[in-house]
Image (cartoon, rainbow, N blue to C red):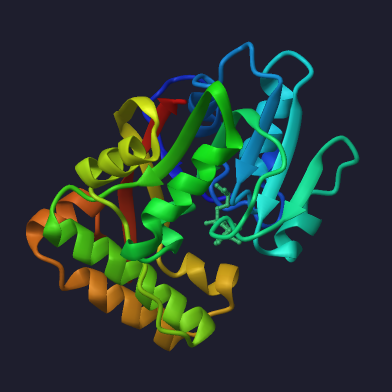
Length: 260
Ligand SMILES: C[S@@+](CC[C@H](N)C(=O)[O-])C[C@H]1O[C@@H](n2cnc3c(N)ncnc32)[C@H](O)[C@@H]1O
C-alpha cells in the first residue's frame, strides 16, 4: 500500500489495508483516527456521505468503542457494493437531490465536495444540513485552496483527471477556506471550524492514477505537465515535486467541523 498521507507522528500505522479494500485510496489510519477524534462519543447514528469504499464510516464503526449505527450514502452503487457487511445500511443517492427520511447525530464526508462545480457547493452543504439532527455535528475532511492561484491549480488538476477518466468536461471546484466557512454558515451550521495540521498531506505520485483509473501514459503526462508548469508558490502549497521521472504531489487536507 502506498503511503498516501504523510505524517510525522511517531506511532505505528496498524489498520491500513483492513480499511482500504480495493476502492479505498487514502487508507492511512492516522488520518482516519484524526477524523474519529471529532465524532462525539454520544453519537448513536452516523452517516458517511460520498462514502466510496466506506473507509471512513467503517473506521468510525469499528473504533468508536461502542455500538453505533452507520449508514453509507454514495451516488455510485458499485462503490456501495464494496461495503460487504451485514451490520451497516447503504443508500444509493445523489446528495444534490437527496431528501432524507431520517437524521443523524453525526454526518461525515471525506473528499466529496470538490466533485461539484462552484454553483452547487451550497446545495451540497444545505442538503447535508438537513441530514443532521439538532445538536448533531458535521465533519468534513477536504482539500481547500488559499488563494486564486492555488484554487485554479487544484481545480485544474481534478478537472483534467476527470476529463481523462470520463471524457466529460466537468467544472470541479475546490473551495477557499473562507468560502467554505461562509457556505457552512449560510446553511445554518454553528461553531464552524477549520482544523489545519501541517502533517495532513494527501501524498501520491500522479502515475498511481494509472492503475486506479485505468489511465494511459498520455493522460498521466497531461496532468503532470499541468502541475509542473505551476508557479513556485502553488508548487510549494500543493507539494508538487519531480522525483526522478515521477511527479508527486502532497497537498494539504483540512478537517472542517460544525454543529447544527
Ligand atoms: C474521492 S471519493 C471519496 C470516498 C471516501 N469518502 C474516501 O474518503 O475514501 C468521492 C466519492 O463521492 C461520491 N460522489 C460523487 N458525487 C456524489 C454525489 N453527487 N452524491 C453522493 N456521492 C457522490 C463518489 O461516487 C465517490 O465514491
